[in-house]
Length: 295
Image 1 (cartoon, one colour):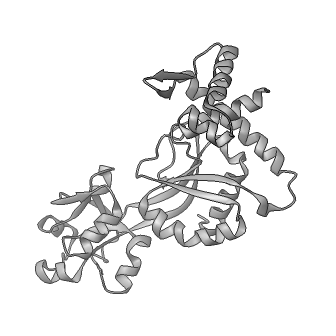
Image 2: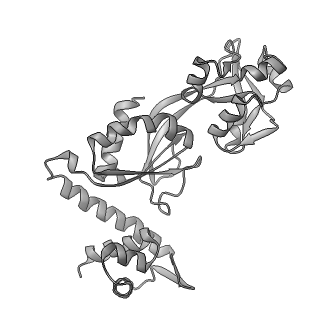
Image 3: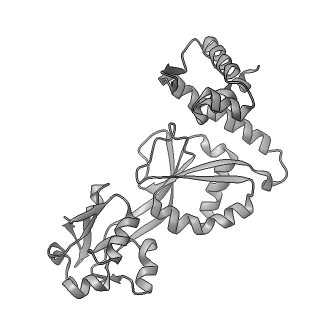
């Protein structure tokens, strides 16, 4: 067996989580998969997996080999696709890490267009508000606010996310509307339990930034849940314009403090590991994003 084939077996074991599952995927017996991994470890003179009570776990060396092995396979895939005349023949699984809100309100409506263009492509979402571990979770692309600080990641701006403050008519009927930012301290505000800086609401008043630190009775780590809490009248919320614009247009929520525009506007970035953009599935997705979210 050549080295490239060994890498494919190794990657299958990592992705499937066991020798037996990788064997089923590759139409091999678990023992043959185990022998290939043992031969690979012998040739490299390192242990790639720790075997513990019938389970396997990547060693530090295994994580490094997985990172570079994936690049080898991506490069080979790109080489093959470079001579494929029909772009529709693109196949593979694209792993996208982003928040539930962005996936639901921004990406989901566009997926039919992407999959119509690339019918052989599969999409798998990994939902979370943090950026996630690209290597451990096999993330191809992440979409989050803020440029990356990790040297291993590339970040390209997508669009500026504008925040809006709003509440349900039922809440305003009971507690009234704040006339100025400082009056928010007398109201029930709904706050994030992650990224605490999102709970510092900054307004521009007479050209000067003014910060109101929100201390709410109810919080959540997902913007979609905060939206639901606001809709049932539990408090005032600050969420992205793309998230609640329809609720405001249809009267389910009422925009507040419109005369005090929020200073906080986050740039949304698409993030990916260096070198991963060479993979055809990633390159196609980045091009698609650029068409629909030109910053």
